View 1 (cartoon, rainbow, N blue to C red):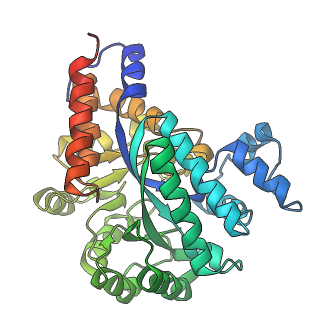
View 2 (view 1 turned 30 degrees about the vertical axis):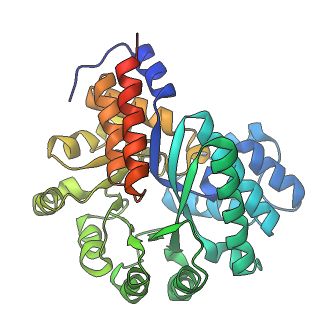
View 3 (view 1 turned 180 degrees about the vertical axis):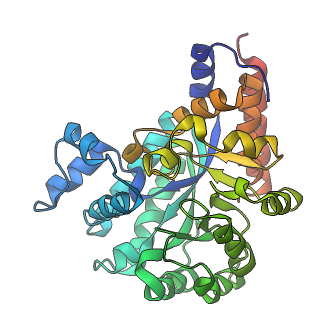
Length: 346
């Protein structure tokens, strides 16, 4: 860890820092403006059409309430044009933060079960991906995830789309939703099929449950990165395993507080993770729903870890290093971070 400079200096540094984000959800990234537009297009939904009222709507009692609110926003995405609009606007918000590369977690089952044909859905996100790269300079890749609360039917549909339609930007396969009551081992056959098709395994685990969920994700789902992993520090053997095998954690501090997985930021285990030598990346999860963005999460991490500009740059390079971006893309983005740091303040 490095000694912190002034918070104002760190904030300015973070704002211009080229970044990658590895744990951020598609629908969960819908800004209040876009959510309000979708709500206005589809009247009768419980979601407010006034962006100001969304802040209160996005105040969660617990993780279960968060899922309930999240799914009400999913209900607003009703056709391929909604999908395309949402995806492109998410990329626009990323561009404003100087996010150059993002692996966006997408839940196709949530849309196909609402009547959007699978190929139309994939065509819509792919059209937005190509436009975002050409027009905004943001490279997007997809993680298709199983909504755990929807069970094995959702798992079958998700792996079918992932392996049969398999849009060009798809790089990984995940598992989201609630962890309590949703055992990881039952999803092994679906992860086996996805991995056989060349997709990386990146399930959520250990967010609202204990370390055993992380062990299950490693042993049964072949996890290459762990989404959240908030509880890993409770198990020294797990910490040793993650450190020895360099299995990264996708840490989302503000999200963990918003969903009550962690009591407050000062109690967040990110410092213990870093002190144990674990590979940590910082992410925003569902940023507008949690009143945050990636720049804010980097500022939180800088405070909790005592990082100066060089330390923050190293954190940014962690995300690039453990991403599923190709080698030339990694080299280019890493060089951009190094150049930005070298020129900072000059």
